[in-house]
Length: 185
Length: 138
Image (cartoon, rainbow over all chains, first blue to last red; front, side, top):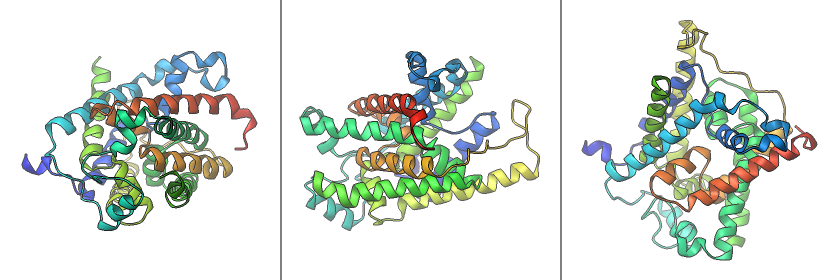
C-alpha cells in the first residue's frame, strides 16, 4: 500500500495506459478521450449547426462512462492513494520556471499561477485558460484525436497518420514553451 | 447497467494511473517540452511499446472482442495537413493548459475546478471546428 501511495515510475504507468487501451479494444471500442468533446457538443444540440454533430450520440455513452470513471479515479488517486510529496522535477525545470516567475514549483499538480481562482479571475488568467482549452478542442478534432487516440492507440498500431499527428503535437508544444511562454510570462 | 460498469471501472483505473504517473501535471508537460526529464517519454514510450506487443499478440492469437469481432484498431484516414496542422494547434493548447482531453477530466476529480473553464473552452473549440470543417484543408 505504501508503494502505491508513492508516485509511480514511468515503467509502471506506461504499461498501465496500454492496458487501458487494450481493455477498451477488447470491449469492441477504441481509446479516444477527445471524441467525448464532440459527443457533448452533439448532446447539447450542435447538430442543428453542423452535420459534424449529427450522429447518434447515445452510441457514445460508453465513452462518457469512461470519463465519469476517470473523474472518480482522479478523486480516489488524489485523496486516498497519494502521500503529499512534491513532484520530482528536474532542477533545470525548476530553475527555468522560477525565471518565468513561477513560485513553489512542483508543490502541487498544477501551478497556482494558472489555476488558483484568484489568478483565474484576472483578465490574463481567464484568457490563458480559455485560449488553451479552445486550442485543445479545435486541434484534437482537426487532427482526429489526441494523446490517447494518436500517441497511444495510433502509434501502437503503427499508423503513419498518427505519427504525423504526434509530430504536430510536438511542433505546437515546442513553439508554445520555447517561443510563446517567454512573451506570456 | 452491467454493460456500463466495465467502462466505469476502466475509467477509474485510467484516472488513477494518470494521477499516479503525474502525467496530469502541468509541470511534467512543461518539463517534457523542455527535454529536461525522461519521465514523460518513458511513460509514452513504454505505453506504446506495451501496446505494440499486446496488439501483436491479439493478432497472432486471433483474439476476439466481447462483441464477437476480431480485435483490431480502426485505420485512421489518410491525410497530411489535418494531422500536422491540427496536431500543432492541439500541441499549442496542450503546452499552455498542461492538459490533454484525458487529464482535463481527471483533474476535475482531484479538485481543480478551474479546469472546468478549460473543458468549456475545449467544447467551444470542438464546436467551431465542426462549423468550419468543410472550409478547412484536410
